[in-house]
Length: 115
Ligand SMILES: [Ca+2]
Image (tube, rainbow, N blue to C red; front, side, top):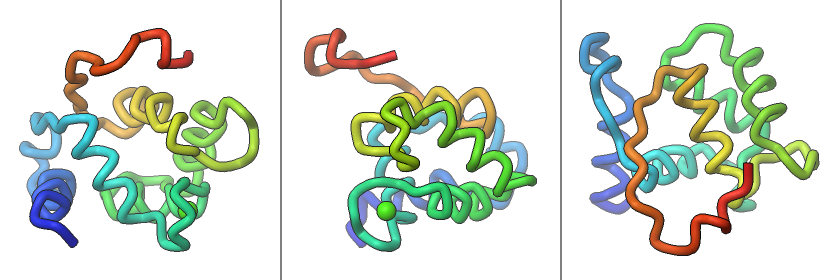
């Protein structure tokens, strides 16, 4: 694991509840954290992998939240959150999982983002 990944991991897995609610992470940090749960290494996040991530985060009802998150993020309905669907997952993470994610100004054309 790279130093940056370790930092992202620590930033997203706090034991302290106050920090839990105020800490803001970048989109890159969020992706790095999420991809640690890509346990089969196929580059996308299955519902099972997402459930492990949510559970690690300490949220209740991990299975239900994972199911709902995949329902919302998986726009091509293949049952996985692919790389280009992570943006959707970020919205869900903020609304449903209590993440605070700082969106950096988009590097590319904004139209590349699909909603
Ligand atoms: Ca995977």
